[in-house]
Image 1 (cartoon, helix red, strand yellow):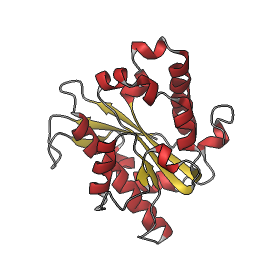
Image 2 (cartoon, rainbow, N blue to C red):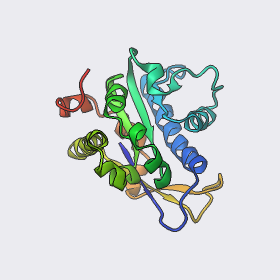
Image 3 (spheres, one colour):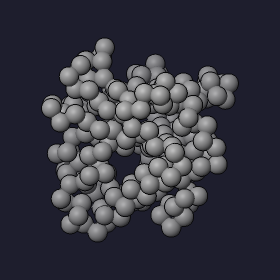
Image 4 (cartoon, rainbow, N blue to C red):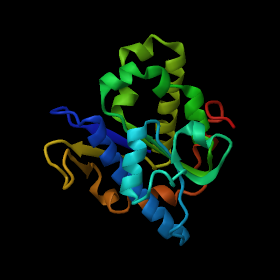
Length: 212
């Protein structure tokens, strides 16, 4: 899991946040391909929104029309791959409030996590963990929130929780912010650390929350 702590000075736009998220995804995919020794093999990359999908495809240098492994969870239902990366790096609290039934849908999260045979990596913004008032008022959304926290707690116990901060004051070379690790010793090797955590599947930790 990558947890995103956004600067409070000037929140990134949805598009800018998606670009920063896509950079993290691309680094993970590159490390994964090096690990398995195959540059033409990709994990499933679950992107709830279309603009996230486009950002990820561009970061990977892929044509979105051909990159079927970068898609919504509905498109991947019934399929499996060794590695699945979930993209929930939303930093816009207003959007989260407007889409709580979608973002905190426990069934959708469950399907996403169980597409993985070996490893599930979740990029998750702190805004989603903090939630909005509407989440507290909805029992169904509260279940999704609980699952997010269960995953975070599991990664923390397994020493697989890595945190980064988006710096809104700099353009990071691409306009609209840059990614800074809060743990510099882990930043350069975050890909291999996340990917090589064998036998640490989320499904083993949360049997009552994540089911096939």
